[in-house]
Image 1 (cartoon, rainbow, N blue to C red):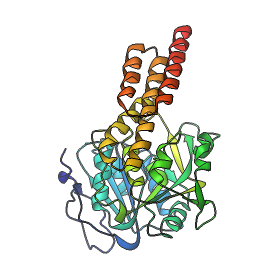
Image 2: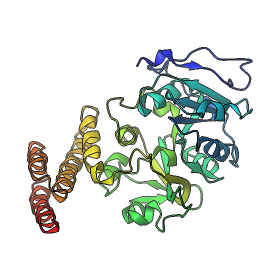
Image 3: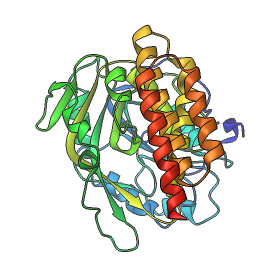
Length: 351
């Protein structure tokens, strides 16, 4: 789908005096954003039952954004009607033909005018100080490309909050090489951000828990060929563009429900591998290439292990063998072989 067909059909940016012209999701002109302003982008597809709560959490922020761009990726439910119940003139509603979340986010990026950009998925919500605290960190240093925050998950059906937040699930995130940041609970990574973050057990790439400086991500767009984990490939590119900070306090609430794109954990390792493969053309410096290749080998092993656990031994061996085409990490490959063998035996005995 050519997103030039996207059209603004609801409220315009405050002060524009009417409905905006159609926008393009192609590369936007180089811009620094309106100084000090925040744009929130809400991509949505058939989230009419959730999106009001998402928008309400934006409007309840202690630091308010200057614009809220809702990009409807061709929903067939009542999303447009729900968004239309909000009268705040900062809300812009853009409807496009269904083309996937990457194109929806790209449409939002091309329409955004803020100096700082935050994404909120239409089925998630922010705690009231999300924008204030992320902005307090990112705005403190003009070299910072982005900051990410901790988050929790909750079950849609019961409202139950899962016992461990993201930083407890992946403790390495609390122990990254960092110095204290400008606000309590914030930290600024020391050394190269990409090398530090691509090496961890879980790459912090949940865009709904992040804020970006528009000047440093200018022309950077999500990959429309990736159906899942497109956020990981995009966020890793942002990590190559400057220093990164993080906040240990949970500031986002991620909803788990029956239509989550990532609900099938069994195949997530393969999606992550595909995203890392797509990243390869963008990794150009020697230091980044070394870190990237080590992570790519790990991704092959993780995917092959999951396949072996599901009894897919042929695909598992194929995926693992492809890791030997990646330079470096000989010890990791040997350990990977042992891990995949264990996965295969586990699968056989489970039958």
